[in-house]
Image (cartoon, one colour):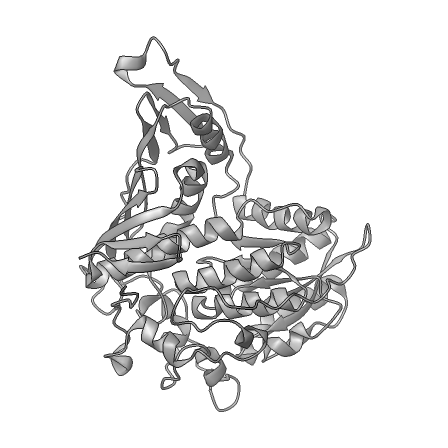
Length: 446
């Protein structure tokens, strides 16, 4: 079985594949070093049990820490501060960890102004995780660090909110899923947008009630445009200096060390070695809630994809991608992604008896012509929930208090990462990829 991806990498790493990087760095630091090597998705023989969670009394503020207070992480920090300032949530931000000391500045200033307490800062997140007074950790680091950050946080007894994409690739996702399943008391949520939109939850109910008959195929997209190239809005700070304020070796972390590059540091989504680009950064927002609605279709089984490099020639990752996913029951999902044209396709789920239309806020069911006497057209009116990312964060806080399971859990996150990883391999020349749920590994179909 061939489990080696065929991804190329940034020019100074040319010739090494994505998975070969992982194979070279199987010995991980911290608690996650006890887990299986990164070269395969085989489950480890022994998964450590997490430390006991710090107690959280009724009415006590949830004490939060953030790993990676960059653009997204600082946005989360501001949101938590605003919840507390408005009296909407009892939450307190107490610690920040980032390999770049300059990344702390904004979030630290905002938090200390809001909570009137000292916010501690760390360059090594593992030192922060040693604290017994932190209830939960939000992770907004680059995706190549997601699995290690999350596993180490879970084993340190913390609840976790992990930004999308859940992990760097499918083996990382399986590794993380094994740890979450071995520690079922943890509250683990993937920070994928659109998961709280009610239309997808209503679609799931209709599908599982048989309202559309057999789900045959679905479609969605995430398409946007730019004049000069995608992700260039992440600015480069002239103060960055790996000799004084950035631990560049730590940033490279599970990947091999490469020469310092402020372009890679700020805009890693543009490079094959560090990101799947459109697929993992954008399309997951559309794929995840659609796969949640189609849970009854099972795991992804086969994935094919093609990509084009049309406009943004300086970017290594493709600026247009089309994906096809076949699920265990035969359902087929098609997905379009672009950063060079903003016209997408209508989001919908087709069934043998009826279709579900999901492009607006609501969920509309329309029968197929042959079944108009059997299926009535109807529109499920869904409420305007406002900022769905706010709802998602606050759902996580609610689950920390109640110990309920969040909507965007680790198994759904792993299914999505199977699509992301296999599509990424396929677009770079691997052809159609197949996922084996028995061994949790992928292979290239001949």
